[in-house]
Length: 206
Image (tube, rainbow, N blue to C red; front, side, top):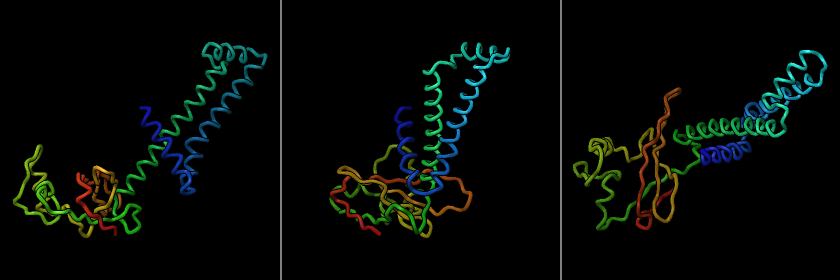
Protein backbone atom coordinates (compact mmCIF):
# COMPACT_ATOMS: atom_id res chain seq x y z
CA UNK A 1 0.00 0.00 0.00
CA UNK A 2 2.85 2.36 0.84
CA UNK A 3 4.54 1.74 -2.50
CA UNK A 4 1.28 2.33 -4.40
CA UNK A 5 0.68 5.55 -2.49
CA UNK A 6 4.22 6.77 -3.09
CA UNK A 7 3.99 5.95 -6.79
CA UNK A 8 0.68 7.79 -7.00
CA UNK A 9 2.25 10.85 -5.37
CA UNK A 10 5.10 10.75 -7.89
CA UNK A 11 2.75 10.31 -10.84
CA UNK A 12 0.59 13.21 -9.69
CA UNK A 13 3.61 15.41 -9.04
CA UNK A 14 5.17 14.81 -12.46
CA UNK A 15 1.95 14.91 -14.44
CA UNK A 16 0.92 18.28 -12.98
CA UNK A 17 3.68 20.02 -14.90
CA UNK A 18 2.75 18.63 -18.30
CA UNK A 19 -0.51 20.38 -19.17
CA UNK A 20 -3.16 22.71 -17.72
CA UNK A 21 -5.58 19.78 -17.77
CA UNK A 22 -3.61 17.99 -15.05
CA UNK A 23 -3.35 21.16 -12.97
CA UNK A 24 -7.11 21.72 -13.19
CA UNK A 25 -7.64 18.15 -11.99
CA UNK A 26 -5.33 18.86 -9.07
CA UNK A 27 -7.41 21.91 -8.12
CA UNK A 28 -10.65 19.93 -8.30
CA UNK A 29 -9.57 16.69 -6.65
CA UNK A 30 -6.96 17.81 -4.09
CA UNK A 31 -7.18 21.54 -3.41
CA UNK A 32 -10.98 21.87 -3.46
CA UNK A 33 -11.69 19.10 -0.88
CA UNK A 34 -9.03 20.58 1.41
CA UNK A 35 -10.59 24.04 1.14
CA UNK A 36 -14.05 22.58 1.86
CA UNK A 37 -12.69 20.79 4.93
CA UNK A 38 -11.06 23.98 6.21
CA UNK A 39 -14.29 25.93 5.73
CA UNK A 40 -16.22 23.22 7.56
CA UNK A 41 -13.77 23.22 10.47
CA UNK A 42 -13.82 27.01 10.64
CA UNK A 43 -17.64 26.95 10.69
CA UNK A 44 -17.68 24.42 13.51
CA UNK A 45 -15.20 26.51 15.50
CA UNK A 46 -17.36 29.61 15.01
CA UNK A 47 -20.49 27.78 16.16
CA UNK A 48 -18.76 26.42 19.25
CA UNK A 49 -17.83 29.96 20.35
CA UNK A 50 -21.50 30.92 20.48
CA UNK A 51 -23.48 31.00 23.71
CA UNK A 52 -26.73 29.53 22.49
CA UNK A 53 -28.05 26.10 23.41
CA UNK A 54 -27.31 24.90 19.90
CA UNK A 55 -23.72 26.10 20.20
CA UNK A 56 -23.26 24.31 23.51
CA UNK A 57 -24.74 21.13 22.08
CA UNK A 58 -22.53 21.29 18.99
CA UNK A 59 -19.52 22.01 21.19
CA UNK A 60 -20.24 18.99 23.36
CA UNK A 61 -20.56 16.72 20.33
CA UNK A 62 -17.35 18.06 18.78
CA UNK A 63 -15.43 17.61 22.02
CA UNK A 64 -16.77 14.08 22.32
CA UNK A 65 -15.61 13.31 18.76
CA UNK A 66 -12.28 15.03 19.33
CA UNK A 67 -12.90 17.64 16.64
CA UNK A 68 -11.47 20.33 18.88
CA UNK A 69 -8.10 18.56 19.04
CA UNK A 70 -5.41 20.16 16.82
CA UNK A 71 -3.88 16.71 16.30
CA UNK A 72 -7.13 15.23 14.97
CA UNK A 73 -7.67 18.25 12.73
CA UNK A 74 -4.20 17.78 11.22
CA UNK A 75 -4.89 14.07 10.77
CA UNK A 76 -8.13 14.87 8.90
CA UNK A 77 -6.34 17.31 6.62
CA UNK A 78 -3.56 14.80 5.95
CA UNK A 79 -6.11 12.07 5.21
CA UNK A 80 -7.88 14.30 2.68
CA UNK A 81 -4.59 15.16 0.97
CA UNK A 82 -3.36 11.54 0.87
CA UNK A 83 -6.65 10.10 -0.37
CA UNK A 84 -7.24 12.82 -2.97
CA UNK A 85 -3.65 12.63 -4.24
CA UNK A 86 -3.85 8.84 -4.43
CA UNK A 87 -7.05 9.05 -6.48
CA UNK A 88 -5.56 11.72 -8.74
CA UNK A 89 -2.38 9.72 -9.23
CA UNK A 90 -4.39 6.61 -10.06
CA UNK A 91 -6.48 8.50 -12.62
CA UNK A 92 -3.48 10.14 -14.29
CA UNK A 93 -1.56 6.87 -14.23
CA UNK A 94 -4.42 5.01 -15.92
CA UNK A 95 -4.76 7.73 -18.54
CA UNK A 96 -1.01 7.48 -19.21
CA UNK A 97 -1.35 3.69 -19.50
CA UNK A 98 -4.19 4.10 -22.00
CA UNK A 99 -2.05 6.45 -24.09
CA UNK A 100 1.02 4.21 -23.94
CA UNK A 101 -0.66 0.96 -25.00
CA UNK A 102 -2.45 2.61 -27.93
CA UNK A 103 -0.57 2.91 -31.19
CA UNK A 104 -0.26 6.43 -32.62
CA UNK A 105 2.05 8.52 -34.78
CA UNK A 106 2.97 10.76 -31.85
CA UNK A 107 3.64 7.94 -29.38
CA UNK A 108 6.22 8.95 -26.77
CA UNK A 109 7.92 5.52 -26.65
CA UNK A 110 10.19 4.61 -29.58
CA UNK A 111 9.20 2.07 -32.18
CA UNK A 112 11.96 -0.53 -32.53
CA UNK A 113 13.00 -3.49 -34.61
CA UNK A 114 15.00 -6.07 -32.63
CA UNK A 115 17.63 -8.01 -34.57
CA UNK A 116 18.73 -11.15 -32.72
CA UNK A 117 22.17 -12.65 -33.17
CA UNK A 118 21.79 -16.22 -34.41
CA UNK A 119 23.87 -18.76 -32.52
CA UNK A 120 23.69 -21.90 -30.48
CA UNK A 121 20.98 -20.34 -28.27
CA UNK A 122 18.79 -19.28 -31.21
CA UNK A 123 16.10 -21.80 -30.20
CA UNK A 124 15.31 -19.53 -27.25
CA UNK A 125 14.03 -16.95 -29.75
CA UNK A 126 11.56 -19.22 -31.50
CA UNK A 127 8.82 -16.57 -31.20
CA UNK A 128 10.61 -13.96 -33.26
CA UNK A 129 8.88 -12.55 -36.33
CA UNK A 130 9.18 -15.03 -39.19
CA UNK A 131 10.04 -18.07 -37.04
CA UNK A 132 9.21 -21.56 -38.22
CA UNK A 133 5.54 -22.04 -37.39
CA UNK A 134 6.03 -25.75 -36.77
CA UNK A 135 8.83 -25.22 -34.26
CA UNK A 136 7.86 -25.06 -30.60
CA UNK A 137 10.34 -24.84 -27.71
CA UNK A 138 9.90 -26.67 -24.41
CA UNK A 139 7.22 -24.70 -22.60
CA UNK A 140 5.18 -24.37 -19.41
CA UNK A 141 1.63 -23.18 -19.81
CA UNK A 142 -0.72 -23.06 -22.79
CA UNK A 143 0.70 -24.37 -26.08
CA UNK A 144 -2.17 -22.76 -27.99
CA UNK A 145 -0.88 -19.36 -26.92
CA UNK A 146 2.48 -20.07 -28.53
CA UNK A 147 0.87 -21.44 -31.69
CA UNK A 148 -1.37 -18.39 -31.95
CA UNK A 149 1.62 -16.05 -31.68
CA UNK A 150 3.36 -17.90 -34.49
CA UNK A 151 0.44 -18.58 -36.83
CA UNK A 152 -0.90 -15.05 -36.69
CA UNK A 153 2.60 -13.51 -36.69
CA UNK A 154 1.77 -11.40 -33.67
CA UNK A 155 5.45 -10.71 -33.03
CA UNK A 156 5.57 -8.70 -36.28
CA UNK A 157 4.56 -5.12 -36.91
CA UNK A 158 1.31 -4.85 -38.85
CA UNK A 159 -1.14 -2.18 -39.96
CA UNK A 160 -2.47 -1.73 -36.43
CA UNK A 161 0.39 -3.02 -34.26
CA UNK A 162 3.80 -1.47 -33.63
CA UNK A 163 6.40 -3.00 -31.34
CA UNK A 164 7.97 -0.46 -29.00
CA UNK A 165 10.75 -0.35 -26.43
CA UNK A 166 9.38 -0.31 -22.89
CA UNK A 167 12.57 -0.71 -20.86
CA UNK A 168 16.07 -2.15 -21.09
CA UNK A 169 18.86 -2.91 -18.63
CA UNK A 170 22.01 -5.03 -18.49
CA UNK A 171 20.01 -8.25 -18.27
CA UNK A 172 16.91 -7.93 -20.43
CA UNK A 173 15.09 -5.90 -23.07
CA UNK A 174 11.35 -5.39 -22.67
CA UNK A 175 9.25 -4.86 -25.79
CA UNK A 176 5.48 -4.44 -26.03
CA UNK A 177 2.96 -4.27 -28.87
CA UNK A 178 1.07 -0.99 -29.05
CA UNK A 179 -2.21 -1.49 -30.89
CA UNK A 180 -4.50 0.89 -32.75
CA UNK A 181 -7.80 0.82 -30.90
CA UNK A 182 -11.27 1.84 -31.88
CA UNK A 183 -12.96 4.64 -29.96
CA UNK A 184 -14.51 3.43 -26.68
CA UNK A 185 -12.86 0.03 -27.10
CA UNK A 186 -11.78 -1.61 -23.82
CA UNK A 187 -8.12 -1.17 -22.86
CA UNK A 188 -6.27 -4.42 -22.20
CA UNK A 189 -2.71 -5.20 -21.23
CA UNK A 190 -0.51 -5.33 -24.34
CA UNK A 191 1.46 -8.33 -25.52
CA UNK A 192 4.93 -8.04 -23.97
CA UNK A 193 8.16 -9.89 -24.79
CA UNK A 194 11.32 -10.05 -22.68
CA UNK A 195 14.57 -10.67 -24.57
CA UNK A 196 17.00 -12.06 -21.99
CA UNK A 197 20.30 -11.42 -23.78
CA UNK A 198 20.80 -7.76 -24.73
CA UNK A 199 24.45 -8.41 -25.68
CA UNK A 200 23.21 -10.50 -28.64
CA UNK A 201 20.37 -8.18 -29.59
CA UNK A 202 20.51 -5.06 -31.76
CA UNK A 203 17.74 -2.51 -31.60
CA UNK A 204 16.87 -0.34 -34.59
CA UNK A 205 15.08 2.79 -33.36
CA UNK A 206 12.39 4.21 -35.63
